[in-house]
Image (cartoon, rainbow over all chains, first blue to last red; front, side, top):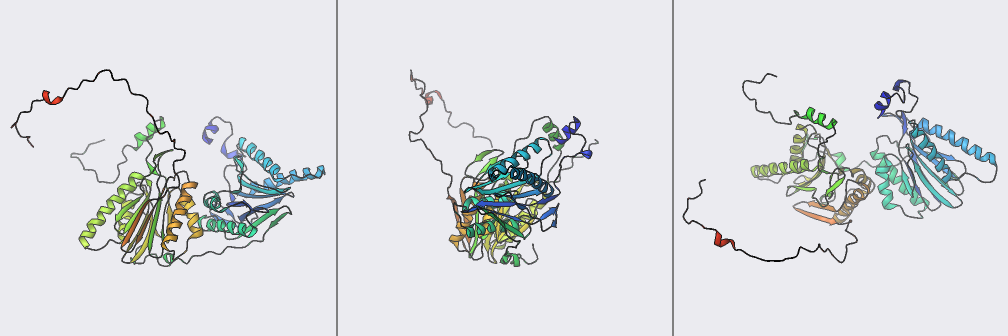
Length: 242
Length: 273
């Protein structure tokens, strides 16, 4: 499709292109779920440059306004751009000074419009975003992808999390999880991602948002187990084979 | 092109003579029919006394489910079974072929087959065909050296693992295994975990579906639980049943027995072989 467009001269040649063609520094999956008091979200702190794990202290979750929490996977620079847009949005909202503030539903809608519009101009923001929040007792958790697909659910994940974490969440999530159970469930998902996603790092943060506000935990790492006997001695019974 | 003085017999392996012509035809819009794949979830795990294998039962032809209840756990030897994912014809043919080779080997040696024997035969065949035989297998069995579980990839590489998943639903099943597997499971716990992993594939992956097959192999004994779970029953069956449209009316019935018309000559020429 790209080459056909070039032939028609609609988008110019690729060499002087100003559009995003490939992501460079990327973050891997974000997993989030609704629990009793609000939303729990987990993301690791890795920024990969292609196949190198280049940056290991990238905060991929940020609080937005008073009621929302945004987590992003994909191109880190585009995430920072989105944070600038949202900063402006929240600033203008505060300037109204009318006692009302943008809730998670509104921020999600704004992000959907931004992502979809950029995609229509063939210049996408290369991110999958997870937006969670609580306002007036109402919990909200939604996702927007880089092409503008958006939806709302009880548990969401981006990237590899869709394949590895969603099945676990579909089986084990239920209404009114306690905080400890929610964290345990998220850690279970993050551990599977750590084992099976090549761009995952063992340094993650868990963020919680409730009516009171946002808390992002300090970074910590998960315990892993490598002691299976088949790992110690894979060629038992056939020495010298592999 | 100069033709040789005598016909050189083909050397075996694949012949790629028609590839250019196929490409040209595909460009003109006529695509070859898609292969029957077993877009699949297959799993295996090692438990206390042996190996448990599991598989779903859906076979797909592109976007269509062509077989709702196929068998993906293939027999290799009385103590070795193999689950297959990828192109159905390839998995069937390869497992059948190695199964016969193992039988001949058993006659020759007079001993029970070992899992590493099946492993080596399979991996040599698949490597020989450089990945064109698209069979991804989970091979498990119990022999005199203990329980073994291996995965074999289409290009011929193998892994020895305590738990393994393959197929399109492998990530969903692996998520279950990574979070719940531990060493020294009992038989019931193992069957439960395998069923959970296959169900995870069945419900979260579009290429897997229908029922769950399980096979438990222990020393000297095996149990093939075909359709161990049926989590996709046919709902809303009409109680009235089917009624076919009325046949055409019978106006006249005339029966002519054929015996009277046929003349059989006894003692005719016997059939020449």
